[in-house]
Image (cartoon, rainbow, N blue to C red; front, top):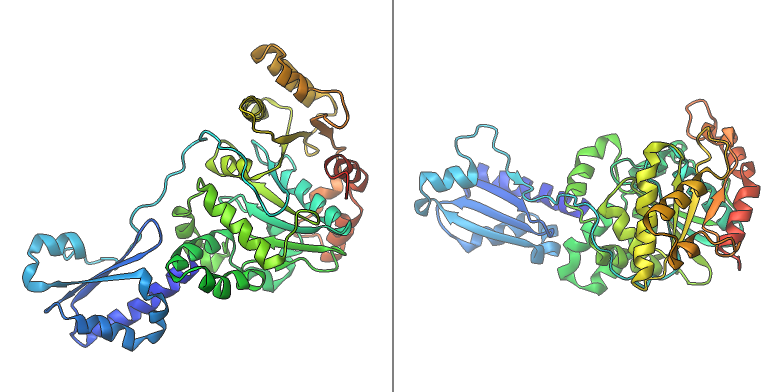
Length: 422
């Protein structure tokens, strides 16, 4: 919502001038749910010259004229109730900006079929936090990039963004000012009336510089681009939360369009690129959308009672969609962050659930296959070194050493399993 906020700031500056000049008496700016600005001005007369004057005072607003709807209300036609309702005349702390309706997050929806994407998409999911999901994504991104893959990492853990500990983020001032996925999607919606050519020139072309950052060569020999969930730094947190409140996480088309824009911005290809996405935990629309977009879902789970519900949910999602003819690769990984040393614990949990709920149907047998190429399970050894990434006492040099040397064997085996041709 970066462009919208800047536009509102410009409009407010003009309106304050017009109030001082006694041209208007009051104003209210409403941001509609689908990212358009509706403005009501209170004036003595319904004079169209006022609208022309607004754009004369700040000509840069003309660029977004199609997205700004201005109505002038004449004072003589407004009774006290109208003024109280629209401009809150009895409220000394009246806010001229009205962000109106915000979306509420619904629980999981029926999943549509998988959509086409410009390159393979892998989503990392966990029901609970602290199981090593983001760390696993981090290690896989480094491994794939070092093997020649073009890697794009997207943080979709919107309420608890997780990449401030990774890829040297906390060591670089350049990363702190970047916008991310949320701002990009809302900016694109705002600019939609301008047409695709305009969006290509002014927005898509800015993805490398303004909406992503390139991981330094000290971390990887390859090409990794990181896209944050958004600009959630301390001085921008209110704007980020406001953007998040109207960001439609259940809109598959918005996400699909974003991936297509990444293809144009970075030249992604089916053969040599991969998108790795860090999903939000729990039962959420975010994961529903990412499940649809992904060719592979990697679920990372602990083996305690807290993880069982999420584990069963992912099993159900896989089997339900397979029965509908929607082929989806899925991999269950036992958390390497816990203290359970039983390598078969995760497998046993799923086996018991399937036996109880599905009576070991054909689909269930496929899930539990002993064929190495079809096996849906992988166990990582516990690596204490990984816990040091992001700690205040860990220097950049130590962090880089950990990134290059830790769980290489496990990641190598896992990637041979997932990307046999890399």
